[in-house]
Length: 251
Image (cartoon, rainbow, N blue to C red):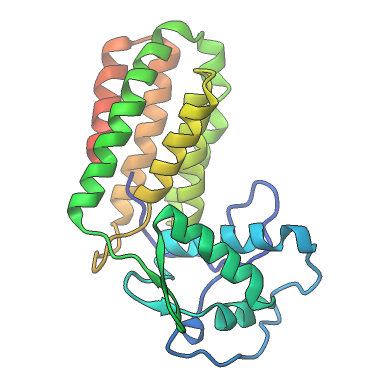
């Protein structure tokens, strides 16, 4: 799905249910590799075992928000200075992102954010549709309305994030809604694969303008409409809405 709108400031400490990460300022880019002053808003007391996970979440949010720009090089020491941590957890998180294809290693400099074109975006949307559409259509016939009703707060969260143009919150709530829908199939591998594809589809392509707020709201409205159709067991509407939703992901 498309995400757009203004980016909220993000920080490395993430509380439960809050899709916040850590904002990556200009000074943290690879071409400015000196250590800057510690951000006073970044908490210093962070449990060591969770630092890498928090930084990884923060960097993923920065990717979705466009704060980590395609083609730009960022150094682990500079990012670590901005997050108030050492370069080690940043480097470990970046290595994980490299495995996922979000960044590539630049020897002696840091990590360059991968540049993706329209073809890759279209391919991701196609693969997601091949996986998710048949599953949702099958679940529409087998899952009782009460189970769909339980997903209402997740759909509402996407609407709330879209309403204020919070691209980071929308990216998180969008994936949470899709994960919850697919989880009803009882296949953990399916959920994991689909979520990875979904996350990759949220990274903005190179030189792409920010998605319009109207598009973000329309995308969120499709979640609500789909859920309404699933609860009403309107199978024709479900089929139409699912197809439209994934076509929108390729806009």
